[in-house]
View 1 (spheres, rainbow, N blue to C red):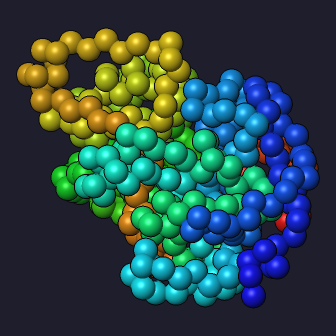
View 2 (spheres, rainbow, N blue to C red):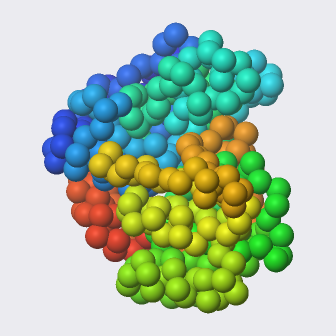
Length: 362
């Protein structure tokens, strides 16, 4: 049976029209062509990036467009092709979706680092995303195995967070030094910070979390963080961290918030021979000034971390399926329909709960 016969003519979608403008519309369902496929969206989580785009716009987002890149979907027809090693993904299979649509022609694509593609497009940014009942997946996403079957013991909501978990794994993947005697500092107490906390503990590191929301810091304690620091002031947080680490500081510092103060704190608690990972985007107004001699003589390294490859999405799914990472803890209890998407954005912006999840079919 042709895909077109399985799809409705129109679907509900939350269309971003520009800063502070998003409308629920009935729009035509994009039919699969040129090797693309169409999936049914089961759940799409609200990332802080979505809220920032909604409030301020973004240089790579050209409205009207559908946002949403943390996606759990379902196949409508069997998916066949050499991109999946010759295997068929059956109809009705739940999948996590990589948002990457790389060019497959540049230096980075040729080395498999699709997240660094020179001509990268992204589902939910420059291509219509998951805040809709159906989503069209371009061929170049399929060619990098960008749709990943979800194990049966993972809920739709957890599956939507496999992509951000994979992004967190990307930040950790380049380091093999994480041992029991290492101090890992996570600055940021949101869902991403909590995921980083679980990964660091999985590696056996001593963990320190810095945050500003008391209920979230209480969750960090329940997740057995070694030290929770309520960041009422940067100087107080710096003092508490240095005192706790015998004036050594952190061997690995993950900046998991867009608050510019977090980067300043990271620079002030970095130990010698430490790694600072910039996981979150910063406001354009934030200008970083570094003393090169400080970095040189103290052997400090600073890294950026962006997105994740489909291989890491597979690894993330396996970690959740094996109960090594618990994504249920970072999902808010309130689920939202497309009609309520502004409420989900407000909850995210006001740090109410954790990750909000949209159910487009509701």
